[in-house]
Length: 245
Image: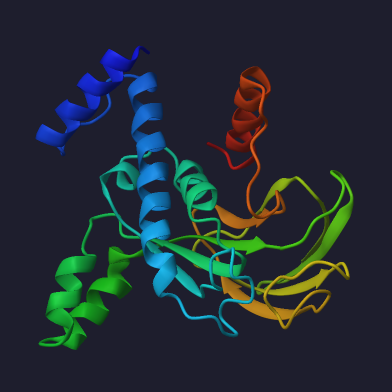
């Protein structure tokens, strides 16, 4: 796609924000722009964040309990895994976070109504206005690619346990469907931090299922892309396959 084509598509999208991508290349472009928009918003917001327990690493994002995703590019993504990957790539959360999707872009309206009719807002949320996309588990630290950095044990509410060893550089998806709950046991390696008290400290966390399930992002923070264009394309394609995108 030439720079002129890119410019034309973006100008058309600015004039007609409700339009949808006509082919896969346009969809890729839309999602790339969404990533950059989130990154730019993050850069603008970061100077106003105060250091503290919620931001243990000044050069990274704070620890977010929940992340609400909204916007046309996210709502129009063909698969939920792509939405999750857009946010993981651009926002680069750390620790354990719940990713929520405002599928119908109701958040601004609900915010305005909440003060007047809080019950109506709660009912809208309970009836699927906000969808649970995934729980993201992101260990922070550095290691050699392939080195085990996190051990995860998932105790499913209906019975059964899943145990996984997560290698550095990987992107893992574990099953936890919508409406289900599980208890996570996380035990990071000594140099790694999952937001449960510092490097090497593990713990338990109860989580709810989502459209993607549980995503363990052990690719490192900040995220590093390969410098060679061909290798970088293969790297990004592998990440898409990993999340079912």
